[in-house]
Image (cartoon, rainbow, N blue to C red; front, side, top):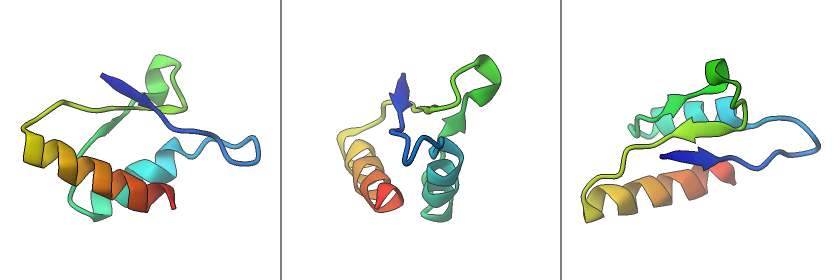
Length: 62
């Protein structure tokens, strides 16, 4: 599935959020090469993995 990352001041933040997640050990995939510059591809996992992703995403978006 893809997750839309909201822009800030008109600029895409998907690359920065991708990097922030990666630094927290959460691996997602950027999809800017597929004409989706504001999205990240995320694989749905186990409940615990999804909880970890959501917590890391919150920190990366802050």
